[in-house]
Length: 479
RNA sequence: CGGGGUGUAGCGCAGCCUGGUAGCGCACUCGCUUUGGGAGCGAGUGGUCGCCGGUUCGAAUCCGGCCACCCCGACCA
Image (cartoon, helix red, strand yellow):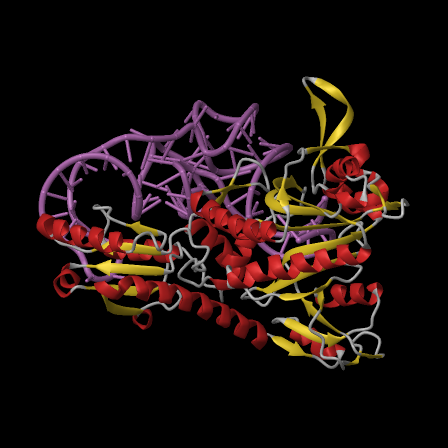
């Protein structure tokens, strides 16, 4: 059923996104410009994202801790590139207790500085390394222009911070997080395929040696940076005095990393999968995986149907996150519509005819209308739903991969790149400089999203300089 | 910060040109009938018309100033 309150993607993609966020009741704007209220459904998705990431972060040996919201300005200023990169977007507290503060406090835009100070106290010997810490926190970046989930003034995230004895170990950590935590989570839980690779110097984190990222394609062909992992080298260790004694009793600066993903992932999930009918939530993250809608006329039928629904749902033994929508004052059609907008992956209908026949109607959200609906015996319903949730996940992932591949063009020259980035990604031979990149951005609005790990080996002539190169870069317009 | 737009009920809007007791749809409340794709009928609740000032017997409407928000760009996870 077409929805009156949702602008079709084809008409205005940006408005469509805002409509999904409000109609699916994920978030709303607040009294503070650029800040959003995350409503229960949106927050439940975030909690599921947190839990999937937290499990992976701990499985790779990290521990959670918590550091202060405020950072003395002088600390933030210790790493030169870092302060330069973040200065324009830092919010500063100048008063406390009714008095001007002796030293202004930055509201953290990220926590390298304050965590670096702690690390300096915690690390003395090579035996203290590696130090593997993560924190779940809110941060504030004073952005010019905001969009719910994709870019808000305050946002929620996790930020990992680690210290290592060698450059090689720091590099290994940086890549492990990108691959085993971020890419794995994105593809296996969010059903969002990602390109993995390195950022160019122009796009890397302020103060980092190297930044790696996962990049996803949204349904308008634009790129969304879904996670970043930074090898900070010894830059921050020098600035904050994170030193240790080696086995040979030499003093050495540690090699540190940092990495993060944010509530932006909720935006990624919406934009990668949803359709003109509403949110399409990937099954493994859906707060409600199965909604059961009872259908009846009159009191007698109501009792019979609800009894059957209770019995059937009880027999599932908690295998799924289930909601029985037994609200009496709404019609089934209204409920179908509501849960469709809210993206519930599977809908089960139980009516008088099903009670008589021992069946239930099962509809899948990712395939609307009759195509996605079938009748299933109540005795095999649990296994059917379990398989269906898997099938929906795989189908959503494959559809997203197909979309990305269909909107990615191998380009041989600059003219082809200009055309390709209008609708998606361009994979282009690249041997240019930051200045070349900037010129391309000014002319096409596209930037190098990543230098992918996955390299063809032989590339061709660089689209900027014409020089022979073996390296390709992925260009795209980004959020 | 540049360009464009909008402020009237919880939400979406009309009314403004041509000043004269604030209206529609949805939502909400109550009642009855309904319920396999957004139910119907009836009766209700709800607004100092963004703010300040001016003109006028009288301002949502005309004039001046201010503020807020949205959209499009530059900055960014």
